Length: 137
Image (cartoon, rainbow, N blue to C red; front, side, top):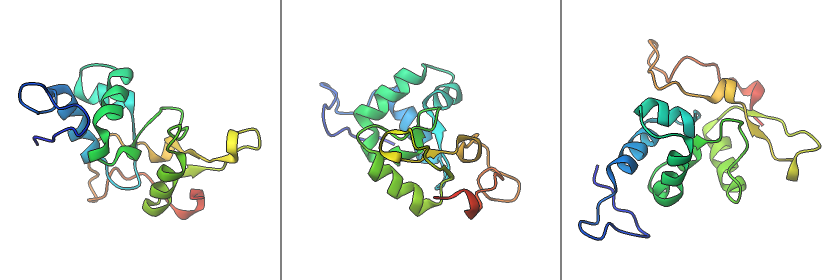
């Protein structure tokens, strides 16, 4: 796609590293209302791991729907919780109600229902997982 990163362009060409380009391409594929964990993307690519994907998203993820690339435990991205939560609510991403002991009483992603496996469903929707309103917060 030839995305340019805004903070530190490649000293020679200004292009993103190939791995970063591949991570961002996967992030672009995630449908609204669905998420992939950092490790899911690494597995999809067959390269790297959760930390490499997380680092890539931290450096270059502003040009893609970054809120759809998440921690596997469903905890909202520290420092970006409210912005991400607004996106999740707008897109109808399944959330779990926050426990009283959770910091700031923020909900978590319902990873069982929100996780996208990368395959389109036969019905033409993302993967057939129910995202009914009952679990939305």
